[in-house]
Length: 129
Image 1 (cartoon, rainbow, N blue to C red):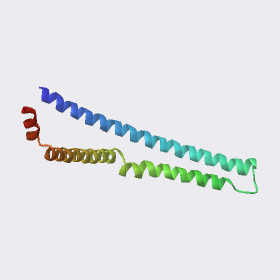
Image 2: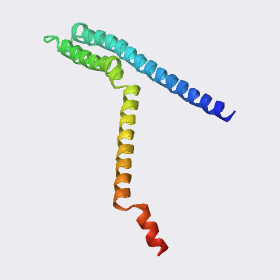
Image 3: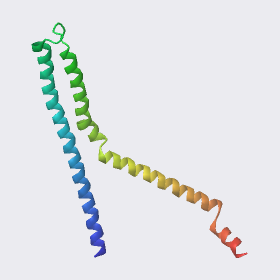
Image 4: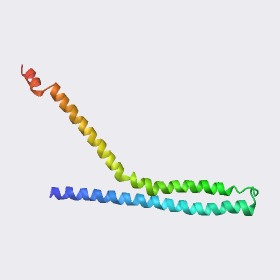
């Protein structure tokens, strides 16, 4: 019975992690969509301000503003769809596991080194004397 509970909790933890990851991705995509809608609305307002209201009418400055904003949106989209796929939660987990394995290997090597330099049989002989 104890083993079943332990197995079940590991599955629950994995399901919880999957659910959290899915919720995080949905939030990222939702923020990207909101960014896109604000970009469209903002672009329309910038054109209206420049062309209809006549703010600095002799120069089409809205093109530069929309281009810069579009570049920021492209970076945001790249981060959500490309970077997160390659360096998302799974990548972080793999990196942590690699670092933990390296640390365990180093600890094991140090323990072997200590055991060869100071064998337990010599320490026990000194204590008995």
